[in-house]
Length: 526
Image 1 (cartoon, rainbow, N blue to C red):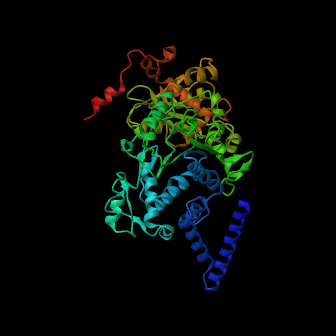
Image 2 (cartoon, rainbow, N blue to C red; image 1 turned 90 degrees about the horizontal axis):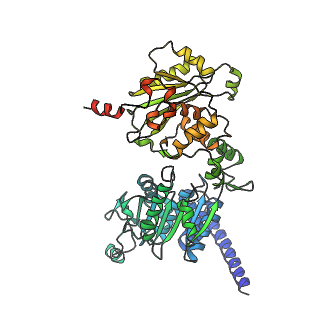
Image 3 (cartoon, helix red, strand yellow; image 1 turned 45 degrees about the horizontal axis):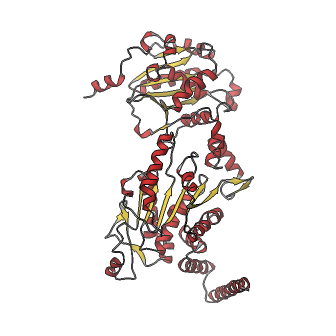
């Protein structure tokens, strides 16, 4: 009987809505105006998924993606009803930040302008950018002004990266301030997860922790433990019984924050991969063609992680490596190059994109020890163009030390050719009969895994290919960037503690009594 009553109520509402639309049309209102009125009424009058759906369309001028409504917003309200938070794993590009970090936070501020809201992300800059986007909706969006016309910026109290304050224009300002006398935190602030600003914050509105992992803080168990300590010691204590708490992101490793939080039992947990059993999650944007392109660009292991939310493929990786912030790399550090030469004799293969690459890796010595892959070249050049690449690197970097060139096969021919240019700092080395398994897996892999050699997190064609080859090895289509890196590392035995290679090297390059190039740099500074 209760179910029949509810069905009857819904039917009556639909009849009333249809009659209202007919009356509005009779009064000359357009369908767009009628729709906008209906959306405004829903967004104002409802605090549920349907109310948010209406708000989303008013703000962005388009429907909320179906997966965002069904798999994130509805579970979020369900978790709230159970007194829990929500953990959302979602594929890259799924509009999770737009929907949750920006739009849902704005919606909650409109519904409860007296609350404090906190966004936490991997860095202060991105957190400040997203909180500014929320503030821009409140300040400038016509959809906001329709839905929450009386919730406006309180510029006197604060309206900037340090914190955004709102006020209710339908109340006397003194009355509004009295209502908020106990709230010490701003209406909205965004900070990085390492920020000391988090300490003492107690958001009773929304707390959204959005993608606080990256290549750097997931590179080792020590880095992961640091993030977990911040989570348990700084972030968790901010929560209040009333907080809408959402952890959202794309998984990195099995011990990351998303998995840890989900394991506590205090949060509902949902997963949104780009497709399930070949059924597309967001077919309007991520078509089969787009997904296949993403697979090719990312490589199978990273595609599985970023788009399918599957970490199992990474278990059998031969190479594990750590990132190094590109912003911290300096132009005047000592650099060594490594070349894996590919001849251009097979023009047909090169034209079809199937031939091997000429790969040229740039590796810098770090002041505190170790090395970082700065960048490189990946091309199918002529012999003259390949020689020009080496010459250009030596000219550009002020402390270029040498370029190691593989001296086997076609590389030997290339070395004989470039010897005509005595100004090039070339060091020819041979494999000595060592196969790839020994050279790459046994010798190079430990340096990458323990962080002696790290890879810049810059996005360049060479670094993207190098990461792809590291992830896909030994099944990648090419391993030219890997070989180039190996030869560059052979040129710095003093950094990598490679006494077994010293016999291959000319006396000036051997490990013993190596001069510290940074001492010379320091002496040369004014």
